[in-house]
Amino acid sequence: MKKCLVEFIGTFIFVLTIGMTVVSPGAGNFAPIAIGSALMIMVFAGGHVSGGHYNPAVTIAVWLRGRCAARDVPGYIVSQVLGAFAASAVVLHLKGGTPVVTDASFNASHALIAEFIGAFALCYVVLNVATAKATANNSFYGLAIGFTVMTMAFAFGSISGGAFNPAVAIGITSMGLAKLPNLWIYMVGNFGAAVVAAIAFRFINPEDK
Image 1 (cartoon, rainbow, N blue to C red):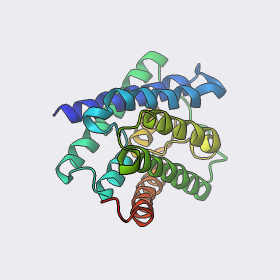
Image 2 (cartoon, helix red, strand yellow):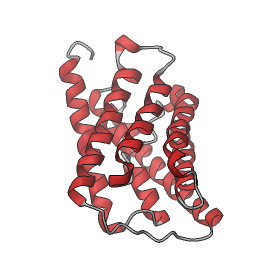
Image 3 (cartoon, rainbow, N blue to C red):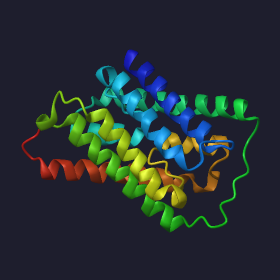
Image 4 (cartoon, rainbow, N blue to C red):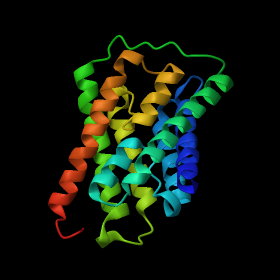
């Protein structure tokens, strides 16, 4: 229960930051800095309790890697999605309504590639800095994870919206920042990346059981 509460709180703060900095009036080009920083501080705040996933794709990657109990997976994912919904409700209330999505230039295949690469980078970094024996008890894991999201958001935000996280995808869809018919792109890209990242980690680190 405590782990699920931490996942809910962390995801709520993370998605809330995304909405408040992206929905106009927001932080403009500085939004990725705030978003990456929000994830970083939540990872440091809750990592010692739940692992600080705040992302269903990360939860799946860590589970496949063998560092998250199967019994925790459903609770984590439900808590993350609920946190995203709660954050979207607060954003819409504070911002005064649903923004108009103008995605005439949205290219599904490009967005799928962007989401896959961004989510892969995030899951790969999480597995290496937060679950590997060689980096155990380090003090930089939150910074590395937050900076990964910031970097990927700068790189791919204009192409896919830069979710790299199924809970975030649900949150931004609820806020009206993304269209419901495009939700599958985030699900396929993010969860697919999680599986590939876990496979890559286990192949590169066969001795790290």
